[in-house]
Image 1 (spheres, one colour):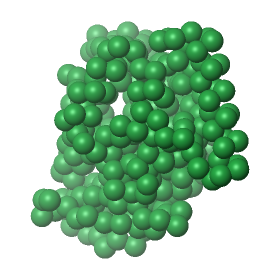
Image 2: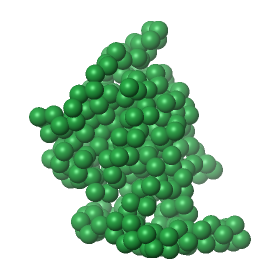
Image 3: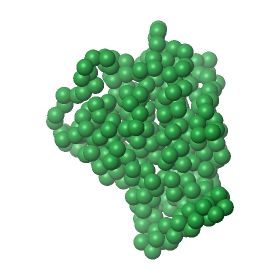
Length: 331
């Protein structure tokens, strides 16, 4: 582990959540960002969150990248429950950072990838201590996400059969307290390209989950960020998604942006898969994330009246010449 990083742990939900705290450059108290990974992933997000942590540190922002409960070193592997365990993990991470030496307790933000993006929005909507939010390719409606996966690779009948399995497992848990554990690929119903990518990543990164409890799917399908996102305002929200995302449809990010109140911004990429970190858009996603957090956690005066409000009112085209476009929410 690097000299400027430390392995840390804190209590959450009766267990321990583990993570890596990366210190920031600069003197005095520094802002910090909580980094929440995707469904079945782990704290480093391949290497995407490692690279992001390095860039944040250079910008004067510390970071805490987490193994969310049920993933990596935190909790029972495969028993990951975005609603409500992961939301609690993010909020407890903020409490932990409030106690950490060198961290400015009133300048804590959150970055979430995929399912972590939806969780980040929900946590921020419920907890005003999270002063800035970045949602990367977010899952904002868990049930709609699973329905997309299943009806794309199977059909409506297959989707209904899977829902019946989830319902049966729910009844099993009520009687025995136990959930059936299945192969991740049997639950996620990925398209062939995403399936190959998952197998490659699981081989390269052993921390990736290969099996999961059906209770994890049941919990993920409860995620609903869109109804809650207006509560984030007037704190700033950045959403980045790809038009080419075959796993999480861009409609999920568009619905989030449409429901968000200013200051909110949607950046649309043209040619990235769901996992930004394996595409040539990785550098841009990290740059946009760092710039957003620098603007709102480092440079802004969080104590000034109305300081967190934006005055942008335009809605530029989504087909910009730089490989993407953007929208501003709350209009």
